[in-house]
Every structure is written in C-alpha cells, then in structure tokens.
Length: 281
Picture (tube, rainbow, N blue to C red):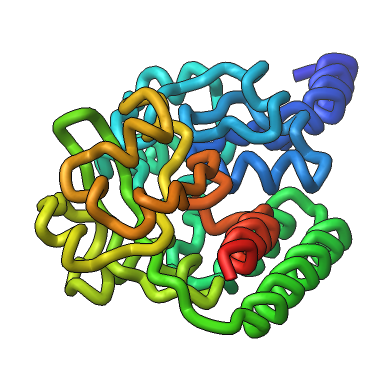
C-alpha cells in the first residue's frame, strides 16, 4: 500500500469514527424512554416500544410494538448499539440474538421499590454520559417523593383501597402484594385490599371477594376505562357495585404508566393519590 493511500484511509477512519461510536439507543420500557428524554438525550433514541407514551414527543419515534412480543429482525433494522429493557422484554432468545450481534443490552432495575427510579436514572445517565443531569433528576424525584410521604403521614385514618386492572370485559384483575400498585397504595397511607385478601400479583377476582374486601376507594387506569366505557361502568361491575367505593363514587383514574411504572413521575402520582385520599376525610 502506497503512502498516499494509507494516509487517505487513515483520514477516512478518523472522519468515520464519531459515527461508528455514536450511540443508537432502542428503548423497550416506557420509564426508560421518559428518563432519556428528561436527560435531554432523546436524539440518541432510534425507536421505542408501545409503553413509551410519555412525553408526547416519544410518539414521533418509530415504535416496535409491545416489549413482550419482539422480533430480532425488526429490532436490528434500527441498527441499535444499545437496547434498554426491563424484565418484561422478550422472548429472551431475541435479546440473546441482539447481544450475540454486538448490541449492548442494558437491564433496568425491576425491584418493586420507590428507590428503583433513582437506580435507573443513574444507570441510564451513566450510559449516555449525562451524569450531572442525572443527579439533578434524582434530586427532583427524591424531593417529590419526600413531599408525598410527608403528606401521607398526615392522613387521619387509613382508607381501604383496591386497584382494578381491567384488561377486557372478561379479563378483570385486582392488584395484590408484589405489585407496583401495592407499593403506591401503601406509600400513600392506604390499606391495600387486594393484599389483605391474600392476592399476590394481579389476579382474577370474584365479586364475592370484592364485596368482602369492602374498598372505600377504587383505582383504575385510563386503559381500563376505555375497556369498560366509563367510571359509572366500573361502579356497576359485579361485586364492585356493592362496595362503599362504588356507592360513594370514589373511583380515581390514572394514566397507566403514570401510576404503574415506577419512574420519574412516581412522586407526582403518589402525591395525587395522597391528596385524593385526604379529600375523602
């Protein structure tokens, strides 16, 4: 190889190096997408999943669908350097194929804890080289969480609360222990009726169980309202209609990810729930 050609190739390599090392991030979790945007690093996102509905700008990115039904070919088409995933992403062999192809799989923390968002912010901030902004987000989140907990401590009594996940008109579940809804209800100062009834996870409930649990407050998501049609339709569900919550009209509706994803907005969602419980006393 002559000297001129060698110099030309070296120059080309230097010019292409920034592009070769540029991060191309594919997010398979709504809370991860939210963190990337909050860090101001959304320009590194090449695609997101169906749970990534906040902020609104996330809807402008290509969407790969639900994280539990992934296709290696579809994901590789975006030429990602990194994939951020939680424990719901799969099938596992799809992520294994991506890893074998040299894609770095970044696993989010999945502990059912109000501290999990702090860990995930630091994880993603470190990945994207945004540590300073990450610590600012941690401080903001911690402050919102502290304020919500302090307000919860001022409740005069513990309301009885149940979370209903209304997947369809025939698939209806109540939240119990080992769920994010349980974390939120108990942090807000409520008694989680599902957990008290012995439910673990989101499980099908019987009308008799809901009547026995006698919830004073019912939490549902916007997706659930879309399924059954209205808040009044929730109040008329079998068993639910006989509860103190239904009779008093105490049904609170949250956007799905806002309430169920333990993420940057969890402190705000918790405060909203706490204030609702205060309004009933």
